[in-house]
Length: 100
Image (cartoon, rainbow, N blue to C red; front, side, top):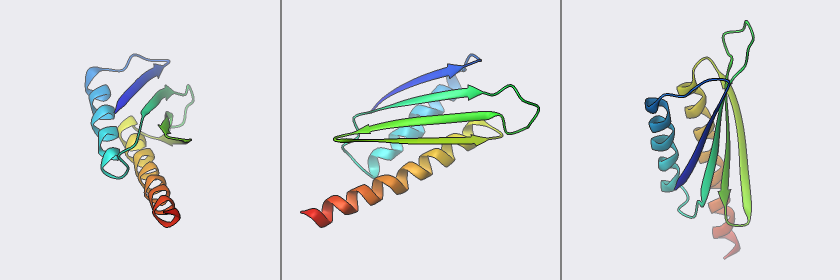
């Protein structure tokens, strides 16, 4: 799957980009028709500890899923967002299975 990663207000290191790619590749085990994804990594300038925001846009045929999570670390936010996407993809696959 093609993953476009963009970091806003900071420069992402290679390890974080590789983590994003690896975690997004796991989504293909749940739904194999994923076209591409856009991952936005943002740092919000506040005094709160949960200032890391991850927004993922997942493109599949005839639809698009968008998930936004805010956590203490990017890894935690990416895991949480991918878990949400996994549930959405499983629901989507079940709906397609029922229609056929």
